[in-house]
Length: 301
Image (cartoon, rainbow, N blue to C red; front, side, top):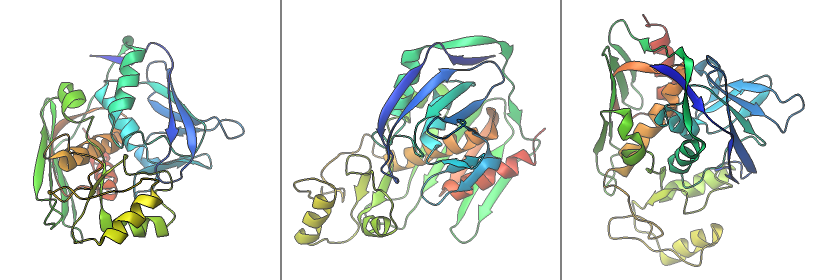
């Protein structure tokens, strides 16, 4: 396999989920062996932030990377879209701290990359391999992620939130060629009871109820629903029979598990190169994902 980049520049604009900053993301073609790098064009000197796990500085509500004194927030969906587009080398200009959230999935970023065209380069692609099975386990949250040596890449994710409305579910990706149709449209999700906490912690300032699936675990008074609708500039919201706010419907019955798979693909892109192996994850999250990536690096052939 040859390395790949895009054939021309392509841009996306919008609002960052947590910061609320409005900005533009521009993907540029890059030479072979360049990898994935962000360039903060709003900062003097336009410093570079490489998409590598050693640059991860926060995983609280997304994966944040920093280098040269500047940060880029919530990079996982961008990185997943690049893996889904099979792109190795790209320079990403960003004129604020956080990329646009779009609809909370990777669909629009992947579509933009494909519209720019994907081209092979002269250099051969290098794949990473683990010597033996590698497992990361977090006893406090019960998360476990394992990769086993293999000659291809596939992933299986299971989630269980001990919820009455979001039942235990799983998602499987057997081939990255299926990413666009099966995984990229899957949106992030949140529980209704978390919205207040996120707002109090000065997060989701750029969020609205169209950027996430909102699950409602408990009975919510009509007045509370109306108050939340007002916070997000909507006239009103209700609750579907399945316990989801009625501003949206699921693309897939197991869309939450598919989105967790999307996030894991994005976080694993912080390896810097694609990896071969079979990954199985139970209750993954950004902290566990990035710690898992660090563990993989220590066990590469």
